[in-house]
Length: 163
Image (cartoon, rainbow, N blue to C red; front, top):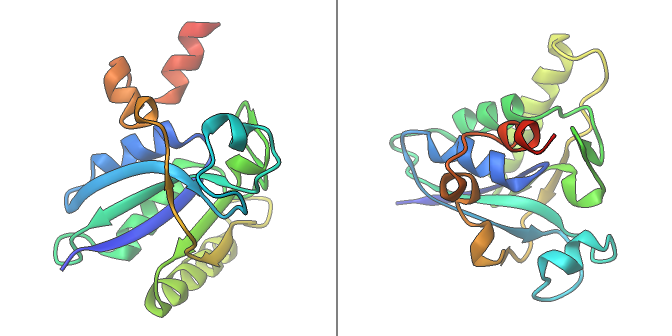
């Protein structure tokens, strides 16, 4: 039986691309979660008035990939010591957040966060939020699999080409 996991780690394009490469991930969708406006658009979220984070909703087969493995991808894909910023992207929609779907995910996320914080891997404390899943609003179609559609493997490639 498939399960869902939801992660916010900055710009959702690169995060989605990372999860799509994991064996056992059967589907990814980018969208918005954690705010107060129903059916927000990208423009709404970028206005910094809705409270939503850019997230990736990952559907996975727990027989093929564990939630802990997904957490590792999440931790490795961004800087969890940055509260509302990842690279050039600044704002609360880029916050580091794990939206858990059940008590097992909450416990695993909290444990994983504490282990990472204690590991000394980062000089600053891990500020990732761990919150109950809320309503997931699917982003506009042009955001889905964006980097694949652009023939890119990362947001960094996009930024490098733009400069």
